[in-house]
Every structure is written in structure tokens, then in C-alpha cells.
Length: 158
Image (cartoon, rainbow, N blue to C red; front, side, top):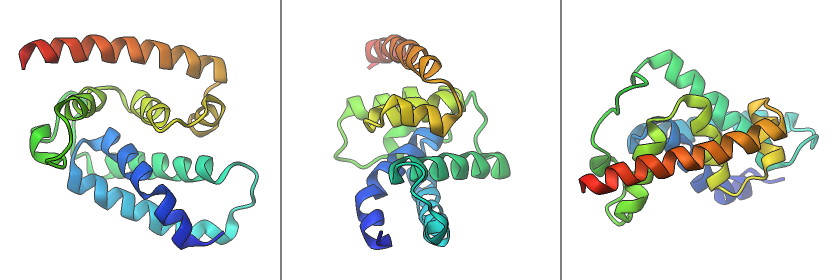
């Protein structure tokens, strides 16, 4: 397993997971970069007991949670800044709105839905989060409903 291949294959996915946590483009880039530093350091210890993606998502999730706890930059009820200012200008408004809705979720829900959006298998999400597969399935179903409602509320405002 070559680090450069991992970096190339997983950078965008890890970045989007970080965005789901912090909804701040610059902070998400920093978190993703720190995640890859951790991956690079821990790569010799990877024992193939899980898929490399599962291992990477777990490191990304733990790193994001650690960073948020350490900095206390973002209270759970507030966004750090307007989402329009933090995302790439070419992103569609629906994507920006989706990130805004995701950012308002509790931390565990953010990682679950971010991984689901990355097409990570629910069994892997369960391993990453430490929840049972059935609990993950129920949470994903409820999160999709919750996000749909939030999305519709915001959509009416625009």
C-alpha cells in the first residue's frame, strides 16, 4: 500500500467528511491534512484487519472529534460563518444547503450521514462509529428524513 495512492484516492472523501463536521472550508482542509499526516505515520501499523477505507474514515472521524474538542471553535448550535463564504464557488446551491443542514446535526449523526453520502457500506459505518449495523440503518433512515425536512425549510427561505 503506497501512501501517495491512498492520498489521491481518499483526499476528497476525507475532506468532505471534515466539512460535515465543521462546515468551514479552511478548517476542513487543515483537518483533512492532519488526518493524512496521521495516516502516513500509522500506515506501517495497518494490519489489514479492516478495509483501508474503514481505517481511514475512523482516523478522520477521531481526528475531527479531537480537533473540535481541543479548539471548541464551534458551538453545536451555531455555524462558524455563512456557508456561501466557505465552500467552492462552483458548488451548486443544493450542495451548500446540504452541508449547512449536515453541520447542524450532532457530531455522531454528522459522521454517519457523511459516510453514507460517500457510499461507505453500513457495516463499515458501524465499525467506524462503534454502533450496531441495525442502529446505523435506523439512524440513516431517520437522518435522511430529518435532513429532508431541514432542506425543505431552508429551501422555502431562499
